[in-house]
Amino acid sequence: MSRYKKVDDKVIQHFKDLIGEKNIITDESKMTDYSHDEFTLSDIARMPEVVVKPENTEQAAKVMKYADHNQIPVTPRGGATGLCGGCVPSQGGIVLSLEKMDRIVEVDTDNQMAVVEAGVTLMDFYEAVNDAGLFFPPHPGDESAMIGGLIAANAGGARAVKYGVIRNYIKGMEVVLASGKVIRPGGKVMKSSTGYNLLNLFIGSEGTLGVVTSAVIQLMPPPGTTRSLIIPYDDLKQAIETVPLLIKKKILPMAVEFIPKEVIVRTEEILKKRWPSQMGNTYLLVILDASSEDEIDKLSEKVAEISLEKGALDVFVADSPKKQKQVLDIRSKIYESIKEDNVETLDIAVPRAEIANHVKKVLDVQEKYGMWLPTYGHAADGNVHTHIMKVRYKDGQITSLPEEEWKEKLHLVREELYKDCREKGGTISGEHGIGVVKKSYLSYVVDEEEISLMKGIKKVFDPHLILNPGKIFE
Ligand SMILES: Cc1cc2nc3c(=O)[nH]c(=O)nc-3n(C[C@H](O)[C@H](O)[C@H](O)COP(=O)(O)OP(=O)(O)OC[C@H]3O[C@@H](n4cnc5c(N)ncnc54)[C@H](O)[C@@H]3O)c2cc1C
Image 1 (cartoon, rainbow, N blue to C red):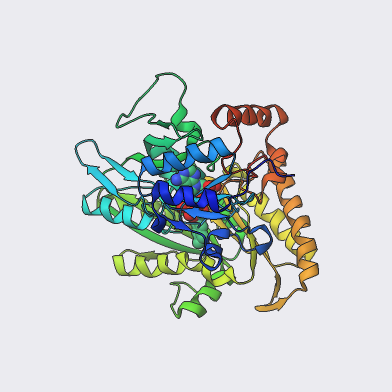
Image 2: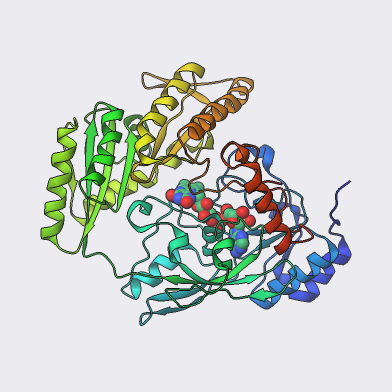
């Protein structure tokens, strides 16, 4: 029997009275959208019993207080772009959607800090920051993600190698606790050694410790200029091994991605756009930033020299904003081009000197199971995204696999790659989180003692275990 109370008509009426009928959804057809995120397998989806959309912190706090008192599970939800089922209401109950809390409270240019509500999308945030002449460096791939979700997942993105992840920019937060009490750890300060860092506990906690309602986010001055280099190789290993060499020679690009040709070809076909190079089998996309044209010229020359020495076939430069946009448009649509046949996107992060070895393992596993495992990733920070597909790919031809076959192989592939990740000193999620999908693999890389400490922390913040049950380790 479930430990949780069902949401009945009386509960729904209570929420209507608390925060207004227009902020409550109970219609099944409308709630379907709130039953899943971007993880593709429908077997983890679960319908909420009610969706509530608070307009402000006070309303969110009232909902939490009632849910805690009545033992009703609450799953916070942002843009639902997550890839591990994090915002799926695994135990039913309430989905607490932050979508109506979408105000950019201020962009404070004196302190270079923004204060925003949790439901602000990344896209709107970039626009506001840009309009103020400032820069927010992290760039996770889906701009419909919301600030609360980005914080809860500790999102990363391609620029982490130089600029770090979301955690590095969150300086303050407003959080509604399970009890309905509101706390505001941190603020517009660059430094703080003032007791335990509660702020950091919430970052990456996947909605299991509290509901983020707003955040203070550090901004930066924008880079003077940027440039993208597209570097083709015949050999993936040579491409990946170029990256630690760049770093050894003290070149820290804004982003470095490795991308196999077959996914570029598929994206070109769908978008009807041309990638700047048709040479080779694999590409490095190196994005540089610098304060002046002179400096970026020198950096580009050095990158070209090192890459060509390592076996690159050529170096193509996208220097104008138009050319860069064309390259980045194709890069950003790769996921769309393979999404239909993708079952799961792995998010393994290994020490960057181990990327080439891990990718070699992926290729071996692909061969062994006859499944297409297109792999690309943020080469310079060690984060490797292997896509487990329900198709086979050979000589440019895609053939479907029977459902029974790919479902069975899915587990075998996951297991082999997670074991390889562990052997290489890696982690099973670099930026997407554990959610539902990876929780049975957590113990591959986190020991029992640490998991037990995590469970202890969870109980302090959420003694009745109502916040996002069924996630991370539960
Ligand atoms: C095409 C594509 C590309 C992507 N690229 C990247 C990438 O480069 N880097 C990267 O890191 N991720 C990437 N992602 C994954 C995803 O965008 C991130 O995980 C993002 O942080 C999720 O934000 P969201 O608002 O969509 O959160 P949701 O999916 O709604 O929720 C994610 C988690 O956060 C919790 N949560 C949401 N809002 C709150 C809140 N206000 N308070 C407390 N908990 C909350 C949820 O309960 C859930 O556990 C990509 C996804 C897609 C589809």
